[in-house]
Length: 415
Image 1 (cartoon, helix red, strand yellow):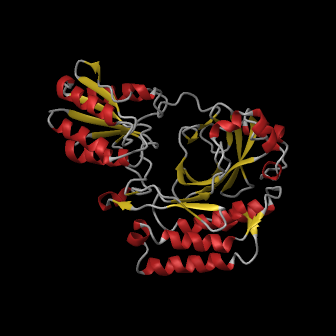
Image 2 (cartoon, rainbow, N blue to C red; image 1 turned 120 degrees about the vertical axis):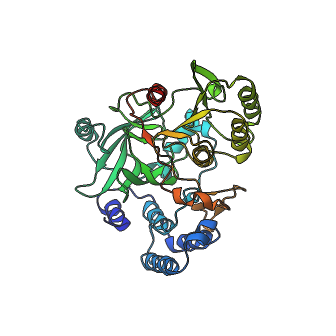
Image 3 (cartoon, one colour; image 1 turned 45 degrees about the vertical axis):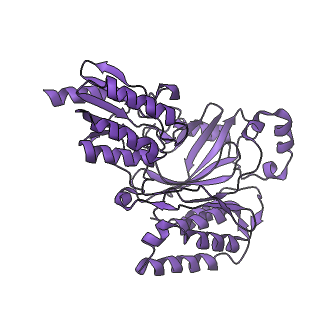
C-alpha cells in the first residue's frame, strides 16, 4: 500500500489548491514528538524495536520539512508520526478559531468571513462540479466514491484521484454561507484494514483540520452525519431522541429493552439512578436487550452501578452496538460479555477503549497552528480492542430494524 507521501503529492500537484498559506512544519513536528511521549499509550507501545522505528520516522519526517509547506500537507505528516501509536483518544488537530458555533448563521459574520483571506484562499478544486456530480450519481451505495449529505445543510462529492488509493471530498452544495461549492471538505486514504479510511477533514463549523484514523465505511456511511445520498434506509444508527434513553420498556412478554445513549458523568447521574430503580422493581422478563448504539462513552461512575444492579437479577442479556459505540460504552460491552455471558449483536465498535483523558487538557504549539489532546488514563485489560473494536458474535443487517432482528434471534435461541 502506498504511504501517506503519495497523498501529499496528490494534494500538492493534482488538486489545484488555492494558496492557503504555508507553515514552518518542523517546529510543529517537534511539538507533536514531545507531546506524544507524555501519553500512556506511547509508554506502553513505543519501546524496544518500536522506539527505533519511532525515532527513524521522526528523523525522516524532519528531513522533509526543510521548506515551508501547506497546512494540509503538514497535517498529514504530523499524523504519520501519530499513526505509530494505537490510541484513538489522543489526537492532533488544527487549532480551532474562537468564534461561537451560532455565528455561522449570522449573516453579518458570514459576509465578513467571505471577504477574508481565510475564505478566499481556502483549499478548493478547479473541476467542473456539474460533470463531477453527474459522474458520481452513477456510483453504487457500496462504493466509497459518490455523493454524500453532510447533515441537512451540505452535499459533498467524494472521488478517487486517478487509480490511486487516495480520494478527495469536495463541497457540491451548501446552505451554510461559510462554505462554498468547490471547497475541499476531506482528504481520504485507504487504510490497511478493509473498508477503513484515514481521513483528514475540516470541521463543519470552524473549518479547522481534524483527523479520523481508520474510519469504517459501511452501509453508505462515512461518519454518522455524512451518509451516501443513495444509501437507503439504514438501521445501524438508532433513530431515537436522547430523552428516550435510560427507560426500561417491555417489548414482548419475555423481553425488555433499554437504550443507554450515553455514560456522560454529570449529565446522566439522575437518569442512572432512575434506571437502577426501574431495574430493581420492574425488570421481570428473562431476557434484556441493552442497546449501546451511538453511545460515545463517559465514565465508570455511570456504567458500573447499572451493571451492579443487573447482577441482582437472573436475566439473559443481549447487547447491541454499532461503529459509533465508543470508549466506556465499549468497556461496558466487554464487561457485559464477561459478567453476564451476554450475546453481542450488531456491528464492531469504534476502538477507542483502552486509553482516555481524565483531565481533558489541550496543549497548543508555539505557533498556535496546532493543538494536541493527550491521554492520561489507561486500562490495559482492554488493550486488545484499541483501534480494532469489539466484534459482535451476530452481525445484523443494515436494511432491517435491529431490535426486530434481535427479537427474532432470541426466538431462535428459545426453540
